[in-house]
Structure formats: C-alpha cells, structure tokens
Amino acid sequence: MEKSLKLLGFALILSSLSIFSSCNKEDVDSGTPSLTLSAETLAVAKGGGNTSFTVTSNRAWTTEITYSSGTDWVALSPATGKGNGTVTVTVLPNTGNDRTATIKVATSTVYEYVQIQQAAGITKTYITVSALRAKGEVTITDDVYMKASLISDQTGGNATSLKNIVASDGDAGIALRLTADAATMTLGTELEFNLKGAVLSKYNGLLQLNNFDNTKMSKTGATNVIAPKAITAAQLRTGNYESMYVSVANVQVVSADLSKTIASADAHTSINMESSTGESFTMFSSKYSEFTGVTVPQGSGTLKGIAGVNNGIYQVMPQNRTDFAGLTGTRFTSAAQFAYGTPVLAGALNVGTATTATITLPYSNATAGSAYTLQVAVSGAGAAGLTTPVSVTGTYAAATGNIVFNLAGTPTTSGAVVFTITGTNLTTALTVNGTVTDASASTTFASWTFTAAPTFPMTSSTSSTDASTNATLTLNGFATMPTISYTTSSATIWCASWGVGQSWFMQMTPKSALTAGKVITISFKGYGSNTAPRDFVAEYSADNLTWYQMGSAIVYTATLPADPYVRSYTLTSGASSQIYVRIKNTSTTAINEGTVSSSGNSRLANVVISVQ
Image (cartoon, rainbow, N blue to C red; front, side, top):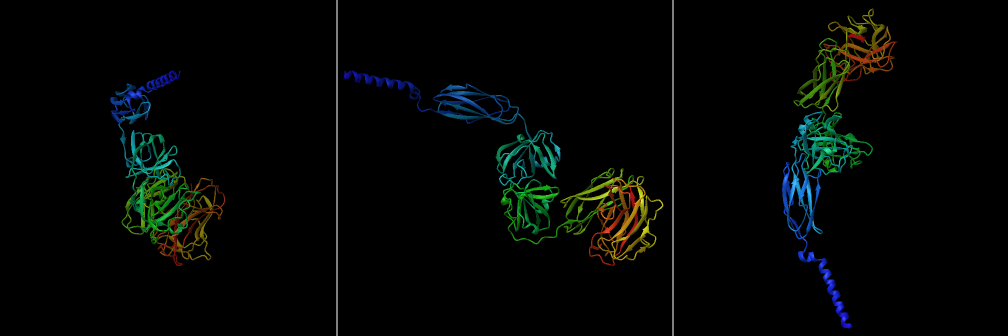
C-alpha cells in the first residue's frame, strides 16, 4: 500500500511538470524576449510614397500610430507579425505644414518607436521683423510667416497683461497683443508666426500685431536668447529701436524720483530718467511685475529693457531685476536738457487766399549740427485746402534758435484749425490753434487804428459800421495809467511800466445776440523794445470775470511783424450783453530773455475784433 502511494505521488509531480512545461513553451523555445527596429526615423517627401523598416523579434508583435496633426495619413503592411519581418509604410501626400507620425511596435513585454517625418506640402515665405514693421498699420493679406524669439520675461512679469508679449529676431522687435493669455515660455523661445490676416496697428503710438490669434503662433523647438542692443539715450528717442531689448548706458533716475519705488502694486509706474548728455525718457513698470515696492536705483549706469513709446513718451521696460542692477555708479550732474519753446503762428488764414502764414518753433540746449525732422499736420473745420503735412528737415544751427514752418495752401472753408507738430526730440506733440476767416461771412465788431497818441478809453475807429456799440480800448491792471505815446513810422501806440497781468483791454456790446458756436477773432500787431514784455495771450470773457484763452500764446519780438497776430475763440455759450477781449502780459521775461524793465515799452497797432 505504501509503495502504491509513493508511485501515485511521483506520477502527480510528473503531471505538474508536464503542465508547467506546456504553459511556458514559448519562453523555453524562444529565450529572453527581444525587439529591435532598423530605424528610429524615416523621412518622407511631401508628395508621399512608400518606405519601410525591419522588425527583429522572437515574439509576436503589433503596431500603433500616433499623429502630430491629422489622422489616417499613414498605412502599415503588415500591421502585425511574429518574429522577424519587414513593414512597408505608405504615406499620403502632404498639403499642409510639416508633420510627424510615431509608430509604436510592441510585444507583450517590450516596445520600440520609429518616427515618420514628412515635409510640408506648402512652401513658406518668411519675412524679417524689420520687413513686417515696414508695412505700417495694415491688415496683412500675403501668405507670409515670420520667426522671432521671445524677449519679454514672463517670470519678471513686467507686462500690463498676460496677453502681451514681445518678440525679436535680433535686428528688430514687435509687440503682440494676443487674443488669449500667452502660454508660459522661457526667454529666447523661438516662435513661428503665420501672418496672413494679422492686423498691424498702433496703440498709443506703439506698433503691434493687434488681437493676434494664439493658434497662429507656434514654437519651432529652437531657443535663441537675444542679447541687448547697446544704444544711447539719444538713439532710444529716435524710435528706431522700438520693441527691441536694449541696453542704455550713462543714465540715472532724476533726483525728483529717487524716493519712489520702481513699481506700485496699485498702478503702473513711470520713473523719469535722464542721460549724462541731457536726453530724457521713462523707466516703465507694470503693477504686475515682481519688483513692485522696490526702491528705484540710486546711482548711474546702464539700464536694460524693452524699448517702447506711449503717447510720444519714450520708455524702457526692465524685464527682471538684473536689468536695472547696473545703476550703481556715481551720479553725474544733470546736463541742461534740450527743450522746445512755445510755437507761434503768424500770418493770416483767409478763405480763397493762398496763405503765407508761418509757425515759429523756438528751441534751446541743442547740440549744434545734430539733425532734426519735424512735421506739421493740420486738422479742424478750417483745414480744407491747407497743405499737410508740412515737413522741415535740417540741423540745429546753434544751441538756441528757431525752426520756421512755412505753411502752404489756399483755405476753402472757414473755421478753427489745429496745427500739430511732431518729430525729432518731441516726446509729446505740440499744438498751435488758429482760425481760417471768411471775409464774406465775417462781421467787424470794432477796430482801432492809430494816427496819434489816444486818450483812453478810445472808441472804435469804425463805430458807425461796427456790429457792436460802445466799443472802447484802454489799459487794465495798472495802478496808475501810464503815459501813452505814438510812433508815426510804425503807426503804433506804446507805453512802459508793464507787469504780469496788465493788458490792452477792449469791451463792446453786440448789436445782435451771439449764439454758441460763433467765433470771436482778434487781429493785431504787437512788439516791443528789448526790455519790454515778451509773453502775451489774447483772452475773451462774457462777464469780465471768467476768461478764456484765444488760441496759442504770443511771443513778441523787437520788430514790427509783417503779418498780424490772429487769435480766435469759439463760443460755448451765447452772449447778448457786453463782451470783453484783452491782450495780457503773462510773465516777467523780456524780449531779450532778461527781466522786464520799467522802461521797456510795448507797442500795439491795427486792432480788429470780428465775429463769424
């Protein structure tokens, strides 16, 4: 019995071994699982076609395809197999961009990949950032592309929105306003832009790709960190480096801003900067930057950042703390800064008459010989027929001087005009107001011509034909009425002892009520001796209490002007009782740039007040 049990047990063991051997026959027959492919990548032309790779394995295997874009443009034959074999890859023609597909070959325990790379079916035309900027404000209709690298540091976060980025190819830069928040990218990430349909426009003077579709921007896989472009503050102010990463040497925060912080958490911040040669600009930081609350650098040195412009003010936007870390040197003494004075319009603007009017723009602290280009544009109801823009190109003849714009054209309509001056060394546009008059529609309220020293108050020289009554001219603001004298050669009256706020003063009563929208105009000639007042304004009032300036300020010279000064004011409300006009001294500065002397005489001639 015992022997029988032992035989039975042995038989069971043999049976178990037999079962085990049957379940693992593949391993026993084939050895350790293995799988190799003959290639890691296979390149296919844009027109498609066949290629192949070999599989070396001791197991059964399957395939799986993953596409970078599109689907079903790759077919495999065979798609499965066992042991060694050759797989034929059939690729359809490509009608789009570069694309890839990844083929996974796998057994039950191991796997390998081969990547199919197919060239684009379209030929891309690339343009540089400079070529893009040269298009100006336009919608791009060409099928063009551009490559540029990210220069705005998303870690520093010095942008007013997550939708704003700046990219550059090293030679030029461009700002982008995206339709959605930008994905987080490292500095130098190279991007490809599909520009067809993109809109180039200016925001507060800054050229940008506006509302650019995020899906038309893709990473190329390359990284090109753009080094800062070394420029001077004067070069920054040319605007030629807009949206580039720049390095501006020999600059410092102005003394008045040394107690401020670079950025505030409550509002975007502009810190005024100056160069050792006198140019000014601002260091701009947003309330979202990581350096809010950091005190501005106290020394001089080099400032890095992205160059920009906002409403005529040139800016540098540091991207991280290292961009302003170089401002640690000894502060320099502030240089006298270049400045433009108040532009002055001289000469008549009359409907139907070719104008010979001029605008004179004074300047100071210029570098003699340096170049400038300035333009005057004209707008407003009376602009029709006037030539615009009027451009002047030249060099500053001396540290102090004047630039003269000779206006041109024949006005065709009456009304107010605004002359806007832009160009070299102007951070904000300058404006001059004028009025185009129409003699056929203009009515004289009162006028004064002089043939002898008058007795004040002096009635209008043409009272019988005036559209007003009781019109008189006198002086106002003098404690004691000064002596009024007359010069025959210039037909001018004059007096001395001028102080700030004193004026030639005229009042009259309209014969018919004036309605809002009517234009009151004064035309006159004025000048003075070297020590007489230089700065005047013409003003209008309906009650002798509230005064409104009529056009731009007036700068007298020491000679009688060939053309009269003409200044106008458009009524915002009607007037039926007395109205007032005055020519008022506004400063103690004399014509010779010194201080007004009590003996300096200021002169007046040919005063005409009209309405249309």
